[in-house]
Amino acid sequence: MIVSTCNNFHFEIACPICGYGSWTEDKVPDNYNIEIAKRKLAEMDNKEKDEAIELYYEDNIPLIARLKRKEDF
Image 1 (cartoon, one colour):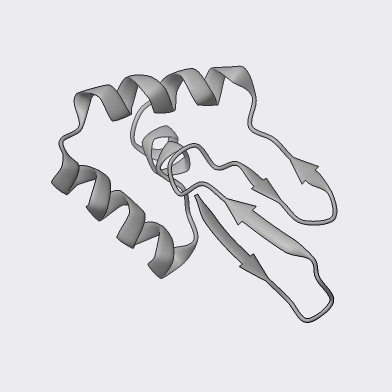
Image 2: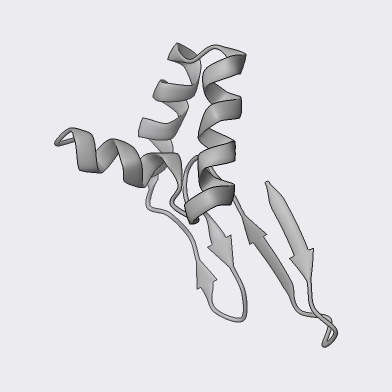
């Protein structure tokens, strides 16, 4: 999870894998996305996980969104 804060004490939490995000509105991924993320994480080695997280830092697109673009789940 990535956690950041602003001067006004709002916290932003984001998961680069499943897409969970929270600011003032709670944006929680559906269970389907969470299950896909769990399954993919189980299949990935540490290097692949690190690459997915770095890609998230570059363009703010979580792994689950990338997977949905490549394949139809």
